[in-house]
Length: 277
Image (cartoon, rainbow, N blue to C red; front, side):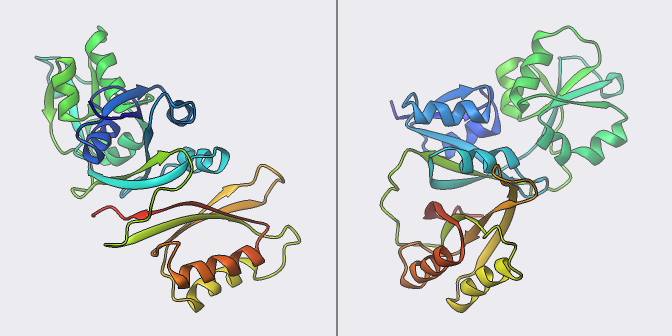
């Protein structure tokens, strides 16, 4: 058997699929929350943890960003999973009978136009597969779930409609987390380095601009910027930057040294091979 890899949700969740995509021999460990995934890795209950960071339709998973800044795990890799959302219900249920649909908020957002046209009440739960399991184990008339086709198989539900997400290319990107230190850097293929930084609190004009200008000077492509509230002072923020470079590359290393001089905090969260789109 392979190493234990923690994920958020029940068996049949897309996060479990990400675990198996990362390591087909892994032993997936279901956890009730993202925080529990981090804790499982920190306490060595699991060797690695897999958490979603971004969906191509619904955007960033903000809780993951907050936990990355709060805890001391490092990003060891990433995996992208094409997400086909399905409408599931008890066998024999007609679509016209549906009144409530249960799923994770991200999945509900991905399928919002379809569910709105259906005229059902969307009810948020902690996990797609958990919603499917609740529908299967409950006796609520007119209940359905949005989850994977595999969840339907696991929990004895019927797939009423496949591919109900608005975007047919709907994809979720997951981070693979481990305990420090960083693993040996891969040299082949596109790379991604994720850093967190805090700007000086004197509100110097152009502070963020000069950080971004530093990256431009060293010809480091900036893929994404995310801001999260700082815990130290109201209305101040921490920024997370995704860079298309290896941290060990001379240009990237030089840019990071300059950023450290311009900021009050600079933390490399991970440097790893980018997932295939």
